[in-house]
Image (tube, rainbow, N blue to C red):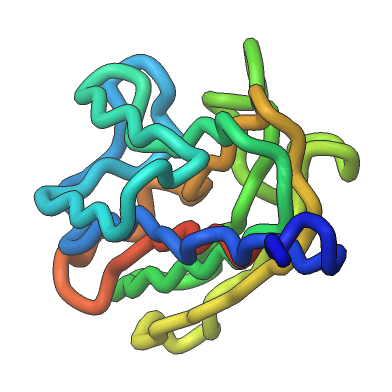
Length: 155
């Protein structure tokens, strides 16, 4: 008897893309983080990483499903905003995370007022093929350590 006749579905392989060590922001998309390291885990990931010095680094979903996204950033300055954004275009790529539309902002945070903060955030949700996921910050995030962005396909 086959799995199909029993109604048992094959589990999809977990996969992830992780960016580590902040290196600044895109030269055109000035609020999208860049990194120095990209690590990909799993085959048939259902997502593709774009690593661009002008556009910033981001992930495009190629297989609809449930994804977990986490982003951590660090700064030495005050009132730094950061977030995880979806399907950005035009002026939203050069805007503070708090200044983009609610439809495109998955989660956002403001750093501490003392200028010594590290903020981590996460979002779990269903994404369609073609959705783009962005680590969204502002130029006040000036650290390289304690900075990462990861997208994990759950199923």
